Length: 240
Image 1 (spheres, rainbow, N blue to C red):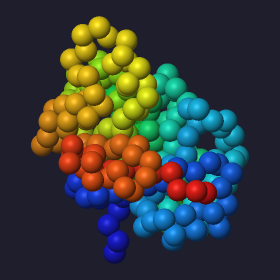
Image 2: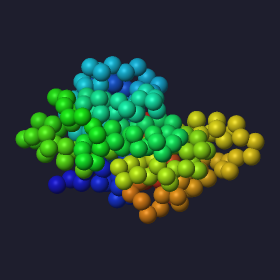
Image 3: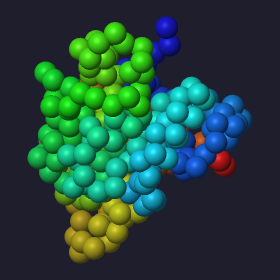
Image 4: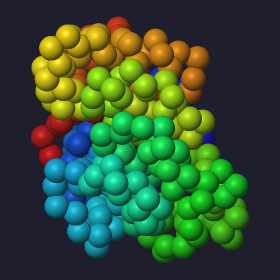
């Protein structure tokens, strides 16, 4: 049996995804997978793009047909309480932008997982693989072992406190390079002056945990650079 996405990320293996809009067709997703991959997942964004819930359900269905789990970046940090509602529409993973506090990390973890690990409510016919399980408890147990939770590090404050966000249910820290760069530039005497310094610092701070690091490297030729700094998950932009 193929290794699951969550296990692959947590074990530190190289994991590669690509970004695609909600309008991407099965043919476009399959072509990106076959011509530019291999890829482990597809990511779609609602933070800086329109989000239609019916469109998300349809996109997740097309991605599933192409054999690609979906990672959705939610619209805003304050929407962390809605993670369960969004997962009911079909994504396998959630990315929370601009995480600044342990409270947000805890809320994300609680909203992500079913009891006893979290407090996600049970329901939703469009949930990932729900039709494969006989009852809600069986599905919940499967989800708790397979759903993927990312928190985005986009400020110096988040870099300095990232180790406190590495809760048992947090699989990955992703970096927002533009917002993080703006925050570095806004400080007259920043503790870290380069994106690379920030990535290395977070990698050191979570060493020994199961939380991996993701970087939006864009193109395959830059993977080695970020891998040398502790990144094992990559998000790229093939033509879709």
